Image (tube, rainbow, N blue to C red; front, side):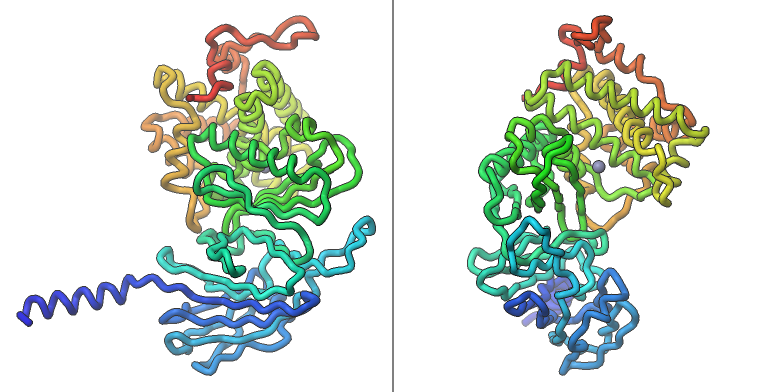
Length: 473
Ligand SMILES: [Zn+2]
């Protein structure tokens, strides 16, 4: 072999070794009552430096401490230092799951345990996962049990999942027990993984409703934002104000939404409710620093009605009226409180000072995106809207472990739009002690408030307000 080709071969070998993607394998064997699990971890090549769970108390759930034949493991709070382990090492431990059994509600006659966690205190995962590395978890479950995770299922035959690259400590829901688990297609390459209790009423209709919500988001953006969204439906027997009294969004290890639903309510009431369009819309922004929560809640508050209007679930006039009413509530909420900037209101709320700030935060944020949408459309002669910029953001910046500062995200949106809209507006909004004005925005949109109580509001012909409620194609 010529000298040059030897060097080349050497270089390729070193380079391939360096870049080689590793797939670490976890096997979780759950006992028949879901009381405990034996966990076996085998690393592919060099083990990571640390394994971690979210909470220190995780160690108290250990029935058998971690052991490896290939070196020493040092327990440091919620971290396991495994730097001393050899290549391809394996670890075994056993953990108590019974402390995470969901409390059985009186109305369910189910005698079987359900394991439910919304924070990871039992599965020690690498503290950081390189982009090129994967973690596959195979569950060995009792025959009667199903599992719901935000992770991607990679095998038809086995309960094997690939953990996503969003950090686990951002929170996620994992459930094992006797319930129904369904994978429903939104479109090619995009699925909803839906879990609901056994024998829940009208699951076919509710699944279709969820797919329709997902499609409305897909139609808005031009693509569904994720390969998979986990949905967990918790039924509630009593109906008060809404068929979906509660929803929450989580993004640790993948996107997940938990809804409390009242399955006995007619399906048309589900379509008329905004909770699901709100929660699904959270998938369009990356994780933002909690002090800038007005951005993430703002986008969802704006889109919750835009998606309903675009899907013709409510007339365009009604969607704008709902947005107008929200802004009114935000304005009222701002006036009720002592003067403080939006930035301060968000920071104080994130430290527990909720009192009265919610409306201001949600609806200032909604107005922010509404104004940005109007400005983008004006400057591009109607060619570019907020949805186009959000699609660009989805392509570059949604995945991974980064937590964005609000200002940084605004600058990124400007860069993607090739305009100066989001950042100047961000500074203006975040530093304002007043609820920003919106009459001028409504004039630009062509929304006219009617004098009569019956009609409430009118939209001018060919107005921006009408265009926003129409789909691009
Ligand atoms: Zn929200």
